[in-house]
Image (tube, rainbow, N blue to C red; front, side, top):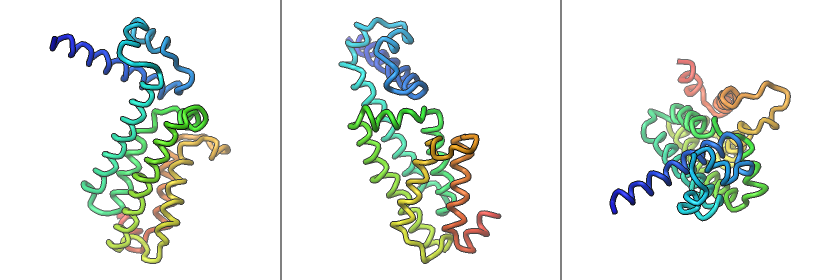
Length: 204
């Protein structure tokens, strides 16, 4: 019995890992249950024994991504020496989780998977936005950010920067690269919010 349960768990893990790989590279809409079973060398019957439909697989993968990303963002505050270091770590976390994901996924979710899009919207406003606000407040308290910053306004502007960084249509006249774009936006942001002390720290 234990061996059977282990086999089922291993099969589910294999399915989710392969589906995640396919969804993130090709987008969600274009990948079918047929595609997943073929890439796994697994019958569709076995696939449906583990998951009711594609929507169930997509929900599990996206929810796992959101939880993992939120946990990593929370870690950046604990391991960083100050607000500026935390900011760089936040960018690293974003790149780690989203660099290999097809940008089409976010637009597909908005158009074809509104419930999933709602999950991401909730994550943006209850995890990422909160993290930005707390980082600004920390930086002001540490004297690394300007004391006159409008935290609410800047937090929302920063959140929109993150969204734009993964949208190649937001930067149509340049050779789009997520890493370069996010790093440039980060430099722009830091020079806008940093105090003289913060700017000296960046240069050091």
